[in-house]
Image 1 (cartoon, rainbow, N blue to C red):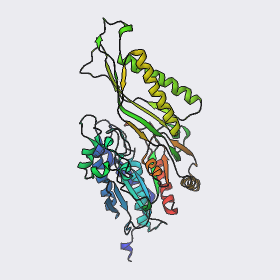
Image 2 (cartoon, one colour; image 1 turned 120 degrees about the vertical axis):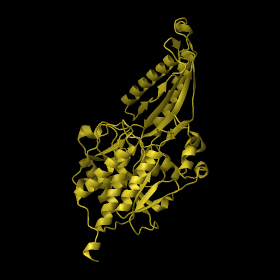
Image 3 (cartoon, helix red, strand yellow; image 1 turned 90 degrees about the vertical axis):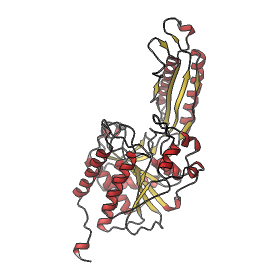
Image 4 (tube, helix red, strand yellow; image 1 turned 60 degrees about the vertical axis):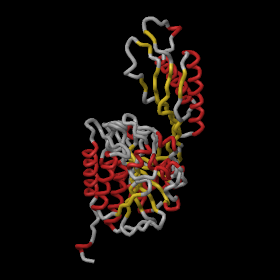
Length: 427
C-alpha cells in the first residue's frame, strides 16, 4: 500500500478540533433563540442525526438505521455478525436545554471510531456507535423511548400520549419517522441481546458533585429509577374570592400546596434515615383562560415525580403520596384525578465494567472515582434488558436541562480517552 493510501492517525489536537466543530455545528442547527431544542422524532433531532451521519461518512464509517430509527455507525467491514460493544447516547434535548446533554456521548463514540479506523486497531469485539432517539421525557412524558422500543417496552398508553402544545400523539410521531407503531404497540423486541456484548455511554454529569470535588471524569455505579404522573388534576370549587369564607372553600391551590408541604416533610425525614430519594413537581398551574385574581381556583393541574436507586423506596414513597392525597382531599374537600402512572426502573451498572473503567482511569492518570447517577439514562434500559452496561461521567458546570451547560472540552477529551481505552481492551 502506498503512503498516499494510508489513513493517518489523527493527532489528539485534531480529534479535539473535530469535537469542537461538531458541537458548534450542533448548536447552530438547534439553537432556539434561548437554548438548544432538539425535539424527538422531529426536525431538531433529525438535524442532529443528519449531522452525525455526515461526520461519520466523511471519515469513512458505515451507517445504517435499525427498526426503531436509531442510527448505527460501524467500522468498514463490520458485517454485524459478531456481538459488539455499543457506544451510545441520545440525539434529542429538552426544550431550551444545553448543547452537551446526550450529544457528548455520541460525539465521544464517533471520535473513538474515527481513531480506531485511522490507526487500524481492531479491538477484541466490533465497536459500534448507536445514536438513540427520544431519551428525554419532556415532549411525551415517557423517557428512553428509542431504547425502550428496542426492548418492547412501549405500550399503547405511551403511544397515545400527546405532545404538550401541538397535541400530536407519540404514535403519530413514530409513524412520521418511519417506525412501525403497530409493532411497537404489540411489544415486539427490535434488538437481539445476543448481538450486543456490552453497552457503554458517556454523558455529562447533570448535577454539581464532580465540579465540587474537582473530578474531570468519573465512573457511574447505578442509575435512579422514577415513578411519575404527567398530569394530576386537583378539583375543588370555583367561587368569588370576597364572599366565600375559609371554612366553606374548596380551594384547589391551597390543597395542592398542603400536599406538597406534606411530601417535603416526608422527604426530609426519609433522607435523615439515609434513603436515596428525590421528589419533584416540575409542572403546576391553573387554567389562565378561566382563572382571575378575584376567583377561588377550582382546578389545578400538576405533575409528580419521585426518583431513587431503590425500587422499594420508590413504591413506599408513592404509597405515602397517595395516602397524603386522600388526607388532603378530606381536609380541603377536593378530589384528585390521576392519569396513568409511568415507571422507569432503577438500574445497576455491570460490576466488571465498573472495575475495568476504574482500572483504566488509574492507568490514564484520571480519577478512579465512582458515583451514582441521579438522572435517568438509556444505559438503565440496556442494563435491565440483560446487557452488561457501564457509564462514564464528564464534569459539567451549571447543571443540565438549561442553556448554561458548560462542559470543558479538555474534560471531554479525557472522557473520550477513557472510552477509547475501554474499546481497545474490550469489555
